[in-house]
Structures are given as structure tokens and as C-alpha cells.
Image (cartoon, rainbow, N blue to C red; front, side, top):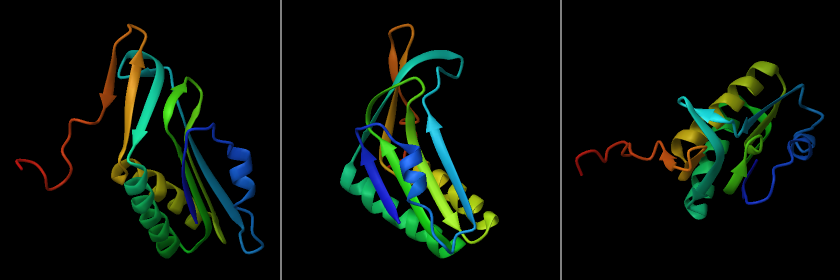
Amino acid sequence: MAFEISAAAIDPERLKRGLAAASAGACVCFEGWVRDHNDGEPVTALEYETHPELARKEAEKVLAEAVERFAVVHVECVHRVGLLAIGDCAVFVGVSAAHRGAAFDACRYVIDEIKHRLPIWKKEHYASGASGWVNCATPAAGTAGS
């Protein structure tokens, strides 16, 4: 079980090799890439910022939950920070398990929870020269009206 925040490029093939185990019959990996558009706007780059200590603490909880819920053998997640170009891998999740169903379910659980729970913020840079933070206007659950 491992979570990492990285300013360096993610190497999915290296991470995938770390998921191998004699007890694993399945491996499922997810790579989130920087695309060239969002909501009809041409995007030229993304920038990620985080609170590293809080992100690691919450990510460790998410990975532990995945291991417990889905009986996986290994689970890894790496999330980039800094300025990323189109095509860069922004996030990697890899899961190995005895069976494919558990691997698929755990991988989806991890990426969904990481995106929802971690203090990682995304800024899009647009072809027009403008930029904007994405999904930062919504208050956290239980804080509306505080």
C-alpha cells in the first residue's frame, strides 16, 4: 500500500511492476491524463497544488479502506503536483488482487475517493490566456453557511 505526491513525471510501467505478486491473479490500473479541453474550452496545461501532509494522511485512509473492502493484494497511487502539459499523467492508481472483480472495484473506489477527499486543487490554463481553478467553489460537506 503506497501513496505518493510527485513533482516528477509518473512512470506507470514502473509502478505496475510493483503490483506483481504470486497471490495476484488480476491487475487493474488507471491513468488520468491532461487533456486539451474542458467544458468546451481549449486547455493548454494544468497546474496542481496540494497540502502534502493532509493529502498523504487522507490517501492512506483511502488505500487502507480499499484493502479492507476489496481484499486486494497491493494498491498504489501517485498524484502529480506542479505544471503539467497536455498528455502528461496526472494521477496513477494500480491495484492487484486475487480476482478481477475486486481489482476493478478497488481501483474505481480509490480514484473516486482520491478525487473527492484529498486536498489537491487543479488550475486549468486556457488557450485564451485565462486560467481558473476547477471545482474549488463548492464548500466541503457540512461547511455551507458556516
